[in-house]
Figure 1 (cartoon, rainbow, N blue to C red):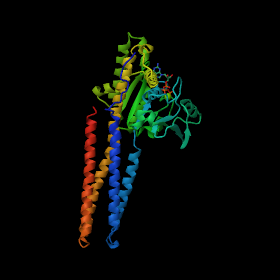
Figure 2 (tube, rainbow, N blue to C red; figure 1 turned 180 degrees about the vertical axis):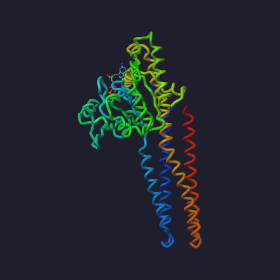
Figure 3 (tube, helix red, strand yellow; figure 1 turned 60 degrees about the horizontal axis):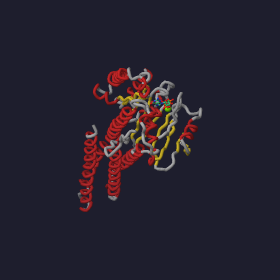
Figure 4 (tube, protein in one colour; figure 1 turned 30 degrees about the vertical axis):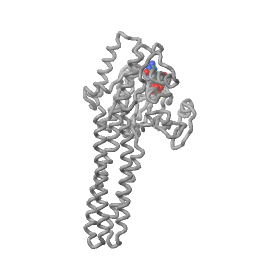
Length: 401
Ligand code: GTP
Ligand code: MG
C-alpha cells in the first residue's frame, strides 16, 4: 500500500501565477477603459469650434483598441498541445492529467480529429462541433459522437468539461489532443490552425520503440513558424520496461540521449542542461488507473502494478510540475507582455494629448484646466500600475525556477 502525496498541485501551484495575473491585467484594462471613456466625454464637452478631428479620431481609436485587447485578454488561457504517433498514448496522457477518462483511448487509430478540452462553469459536460452544441452524458457518448466518418482530421471538436470536476481546467488550462502525426498529410494545415497559439507542446513518444522521424519532422515544421516552441518529451509506456530490468538503464540512457539530441541539436530550443528537465519516462495508463482508484476513495496497492510503479508515478508528477511552470511562464509572457507594453505606450500618447489640449485651454475657464490636471495624474497612476504589474509578474516568474 502506497502512502504518497498524490496531489501535485499544492499552495505553490504555478498555474495560479497566470490565473491571478489574468485577473489583475483585466482589472487594469477595465480601469484604463473607463479612464479613456471619461477623457472622451470631457473632450466632447468642449465648444465645437475647439474640437479637432485628429484628436477625436485618436480617442475613438484608443477606445476601440482597449476594448479589443480587453476582449482578447478575458478569453486568454494556457494552451498545451499533444502530438505523437498513433497509439503512443496521447489521449491517455491527457486523461491522466485530467484525472478522469474523458477522451476516448484505445488500440488502433482512435483519435480522428482535434479535440480541445476546456473548462466550463456549467455542471454537465458538452461538446461544440461546427458551432453546434451537443450535450454528452458520458465518455462513451463522446466517443460515439466523434465516431462519424465526416470528421476530417483537421476538424476541431471542443469538449467542455465542468471546472468543478477538474482542477487543471479550473486554472484556465486548455488541452489539445491530436490524431497521430503518422496518419495525415495535413501537417502544415494543423500547424496553422492549432499550433500557433500553443504555449507548450508535449511530444508523446513510445518508450517501447524510439523517437521516430515522422514525429521529429512535425516539430521541425512547427519550429519554422514558431521560433522557440516549448517542448516536453514523454517516453510513455515505460511500464513495459518493468519486465526487462536487465536492459532498463541502458534503454533509458539511449532514449534520453536521442531525445536530448533532438531538442538541443535538431530543434535548437534548449541547451544540454535544460533539455534534461524536458524528458520524462512515464506510464500514463498507470497514472490514470491510480488516480481513478484514489477518486473512488481506494488506497493504492502497489503490488497490483508493475515493478517500479512508484518511481514512474513520481516522474509523472515531476513532469506535471515542470510543464505547469513552463506553461504559466510562457503564457504570461506571450499573452500579457505585449499588451502591457501597448497600453504603456498609449498612456504616453494620452499625456501628450492632454498637454496639447491643456495648452489650448488657456482662454477657457480655469475649471477645465484643473480637470485636465486631474486626468493627467490619473493617467500617470494607471501607467504606474501597469509598470508595477509587469514587475510583480516578472518577479513571480523568476521565483518559479
Ligand atoms: P491515437 O488517438 O490513435 O493517435 O492514439 P493515442 O496516441 O491517443 O493513444 P491512446 O491514448 O488511445 O492509447 C493507445 C493504447 O495504448 C490504449 O489501449 C491505451 O490503453 C494504451 N496505453 C496508453 N498509455 C499506456 C502506457 O503508459 N502503458 C501501456 N502499457 N499502455 C498504454
Ligand atoms: Mg488518441
